[in-house]
Length: 348
Image (cartoon, rainbow, N blue to C red):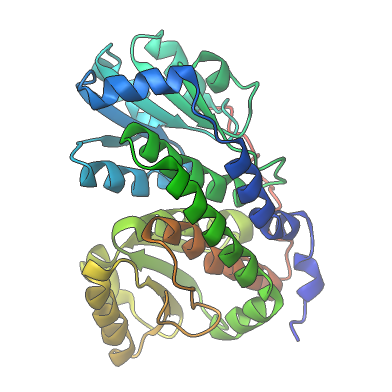
């Protein structure tokens, strides 16, 4: 039994366990508005010269699967942190630009700056969890998530944003929306099934991560969403060093840091690069490093059930959330309790 198991049983854990309900609520509320229908038609007719996907923090990382999905459909989006976009790329604020801006609060400092700089020149689709936010008020079209209130670190707002963005891709690219909804209904229980075993997951991760000083998360393709968001929430939740990067990038330098004090979580990811990720896992272990695979071929608590390809990024963040709880239990600190930061970043 974990020495400080009770310290993790607070608001952050309740938010994590509320994710299945948040996904169902978001699915039930997704609507094709007149404004979004009009923008989607213009998008498919080539009415936009540039497509910009933007956000900060976990909202930024959630955009990576969207970027890949649009590329797969023949488009060439740009994915940019909002803090860089508003100060260094102002020529992109143009009537021929479509901006998809993701912000859970809809009122973070960078999003407010974006709306001020844009002055309604570029067309903005806002994806937010806050219907009365500045983003929701000033965007030409809004996709609302229904995650409900969240105590601190992004969890249910992150997974609902992933769902909403996949639905937005279906709208923009004229996919079969009824089929998409049915796929979601079948996939959502997978989240509930994984979280049902949260206590054993946390216990096992506490054993696996015993004695580590640094944590790396690596993957390819759509898994980079969980890699980036995962490293962020570990630092945020636990004040613990974590770095996310592509599996290829890990070989270009950080591989030299392999030791018993450093741990690597390798995401198996999509089929086209899965063998490369498995090879990296083997190479890490052969060099005496500590690593575990997250994916359908993994062992508990890292194993994920088979799911539609687009749903995998939602499942991939769940083991990382368990890691945040396990590290907090080891450290004897309440996970997700902010000491220096706040839920909404209001200063640039």
